[in-house]
Image (cartoon, rainbow, N blue to C red; front, side, top):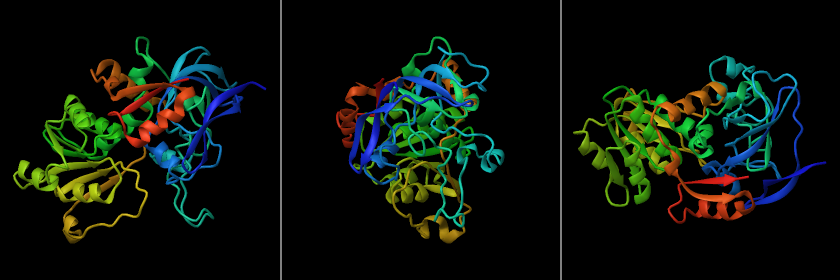
Length: 361
């Protein structure tokens, strides 16, 4: 049996490179040979034990590679073709998929024996099936999820498409941004930076970026933010209210997943404003009564999971190819798969100005 290297969750605090069999695709699957992947903030939640996955599960959910083998039912692709798949791989057959929420494919509610709501079943790579930090990955429902990479685009140019770009843009879409809007984006990690870029593309005229990292604020400026606020230097709520003349922002996008940033994102909203939440919360949130005007402020709070599927990926790559958006500067460090443990340590500790990593398999 042919074997491959894969980064697997061993236990809390340990993700290690192990040997695993190269998977064999079923009729509706494809085997993708990974050429480039990356580490996501969600993988750090897995590493820390804040998001539970099975032991020895291969982690990672951002695949760029070459089609090695196609299942017998998969049409419209060829072996040897460069392709990627979204972090979310919907079947497009479930109730949530057909109800217009393909990212929630397979989601279910309490009462089905699962002891709670599982809203991440559309996220399969590195969650419920082996993921992409490996030499090969099995892409389920491949005809719905494989997206050919246009000629002339490098791996690194499209590396943000499977997750952070799609997620960040969904944050801007959920915010309902209109031309001329004022938008505040809280946290400027990879997803926050993509949300900043997405807000500008959606038509925001004033984008306020909030972070404590000078290099991330500088990057936010490159991606379209007009105002850069370091929350360690100013009271960002007071400052944003001053900037808006006390009116508040039309929309805020929360990209970190903490109570503090959630509260700030609420408190800067205008009456009738929208909070678009992208953060992965590891603790229960409290809703501050005063920030939502005792429930009478006409505010909207929207959550999101990264959209996936081949059409979403085509649109993301279309922006890269024709929209003039270059996200390669987000890649600050590069590692071979053999050194992925070092890459995890760097990324988890947020050292050396790291924003995003490219992992070559």
